Length: 515
Figure 1 (cartoon, helix red, strand yellow):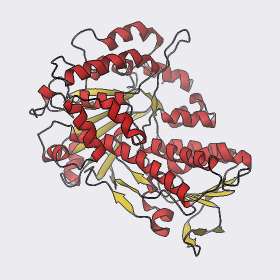
Figure 2: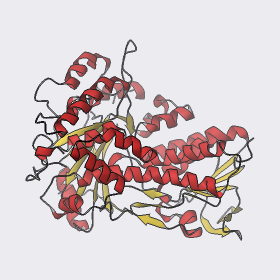
Figure 3: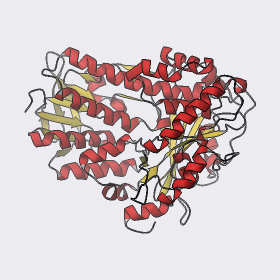
Figure 4: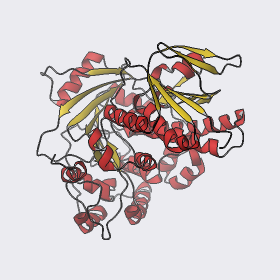
């Protein structure tokens, strides 16, 4: 066994992050004799509102050798072709757009899309909209599953998932405990430190003192180990992202109606609302800035938006500290999940960040002969590059908005602090210079493909003769995007649609029962 691999690992905290860490470490290192334990308080509830993923989660389950037929029914999971953004732009024809997950089948469309956008950026006048190019947008428009039902010459698409995060954590717990991981349901009462400042042991209420070579902090926003014990300070992103609060509620999913294969992110007066379809219900939330709207007014707006204004339905309220810590791997402690930082869930990046951090840690351990401070510094640098790249992409949604109906949206556009890298990207787009070359130059900082940046900027109508801020168009019920003329995506869809089926019907195959 490589001597850099820790022989005893103690994960402190459960939740989705804790059990994801446990599952990946168990899958990779348990066969090498590494002892992995997880301690979690039986009384601390999980936040449990993050219900969307990126395609990276497919790799997670592949590593665990767990099929969709096994985990999806246990978590009321559905498929996700991408995210529809509604009401972020007031430019005519750009009131909504779809951000798809990109696949090999899109390669011809991507080049056409890039060329059309580049011509439009350089003073063209054609109506260029991303929904007219990508197959996933057409699938979502028609409530189809992004998974092909045929085997002969069927396109393979990238996709994510929607799921009940509480059920996902419970599923992973059952899985890894069944494989031999030690699960301790107990309260942590003290964190003891050694003379060099590292963690010496964890003292628990019923199980006494617990020792390990590596301690993984999955205690959420409290950061029991990394922040409270080791003193790592948080670096807030409040100047970049104004939203600091959220609320969530579940609403029924009517029977015998189509189940969407997309997340909806609709702009409201002081933030945005998500709508996520599960197999048994919708998950809904409102992410907003308390500096621009009170909690009571935000809740009333949210209730009115959902059509539950007069109903006795409890709304769950959350504080949302946005930012990151500087060092995710400090001494003998690794922070995972909310303890390492949080960026609002606009692009469903929380589990992606968690998974990527764990995978990068494992890869780092396997490629060094000795764990030194320099090794940790490189690891922390790359994790921070990833987080700040995600932050920049999220910030860009706000600073390219064209709404003028509330002070919030004007402030997001005019007062948001932007990194140098983001300023360069927006400047390159506006000047008509090569965005792709700049993205390549920025390198590891960029987590999003050029296709995503083009979809975001074109989808908001950020073109020269549409740059003036127009009066806002009120958010109406979201309807499928209807192309004005036959489009590349429509033609591709007509050619390939026989490979796909209704989302609800495909889920019934996975679940083994009628939904």
